Image (cartoon, rainbow, N blue to C red; front, side, top):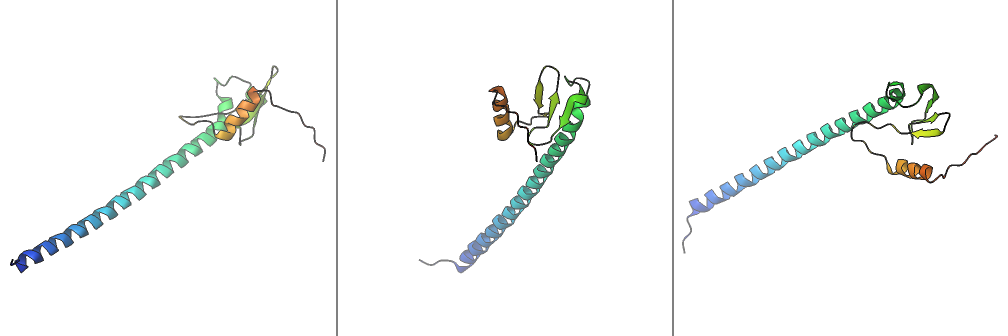
Length: 123
């Protein structure tokens, strides 16, 4: 059996070109993935900043259910507390599709079960 050396050389060159194309395409895909991750990170960062600023202004909006003067901003893990005549309210302000964190859910559940205590501490 006699194999044409020109044909073998052509196949080797073709395989080499295909390997280079696959490598180049892989680098393009990685570059696009990196850019996508960067854009998603910037979007998430913007959403967090928007939410943080919203937390401080929400009590002054007309549809806020309490007197803004009774609201005391905390920041974390709950946005604030509103001291009303009928009750003390833990207030968590959310924007968009944001959800309660696990810690916030735990606090909500403790409040709903009445697991709230008073402590007077003197230093």
